[in-house]
Image (cartoon, rainbow, N blue to C red; front, top):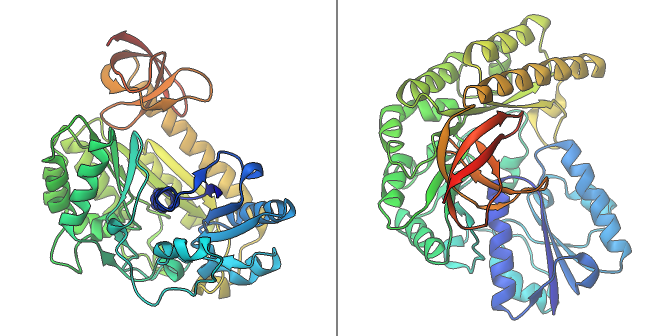
Length: 415
């Protein structure tokens, strides 16, 4: 049987997609690179944003029009089943039913799981970049978030199982490990472990690899800040933090049910840059949340000016099904759009200014994948993207010759 896997969304979803592929290969399927040549299609969906959902729904319709058997996986089946049915989808796998893929291949319909499954016991396809799940779910109750309806409450995987998966990925050639979950900073709170413990265990493994720590909420990061800063000291850890603040207004953060303040975000960012001056700070902003005033929005812009993130992902508020925010009165669309334009422009300005600080710097890196514009992509020790001419899998010393908005154009000096 020929199978095609198409995945959307975050690194956590990408990890699920690798498990889907690994299971299909173990079951004797041939993985194909286009849907046209497939007998069965696994579409791994994301439900974080309305725009992504619409794109996926259109894609499902297009795939079904090819008279293909389409299995919709990922978060959308538990976030917005109604719209999936309207799009014509008929077969689904939730995020805790990936072990049931052999049953799906036999033509069986699989009900949603009633308990967690151990994903570290499932087959997984690893490459030069290996997303490694450390937990599922979260401890928050954000008013705007539909993902919790799909992933549930926190479930941390055992530290030794995660380390075993990391060791396996390294043995199969992985040069970059992504430790991923909905909130990496709460890892282990349900199992007597912690993210710093896990980082220390992973970086103690032998091999030439680096580790990227996934998204962590500012309040949870603050709670373990001293230990977290120490764990980042390893040369194997990218000096990169993704800490979504969502708003610079504590009033809006309260309405969002976020478990942090704007000051918490600033404190974590300042601590990391104080210990690691090159540290990349990435954050997320939602503009136009119900009740956001002009003054609230200006507080967000002022916060960004003070902290100066390297990356600012700006999203317009759009209600997700079965969330508290879906019942709130929306702001006028023109207001939200105007704020999105202004915030995005400031984010781009700050990104370019931060990138320009690295012009002329030299870094050691590994060519991990090909760039769409030509050349290869490597990462600086702070995870900034380096574009240069080289061969995949080889190590290089590169010098940054030009700072662009999303990358550092570089030239290889030796390898």
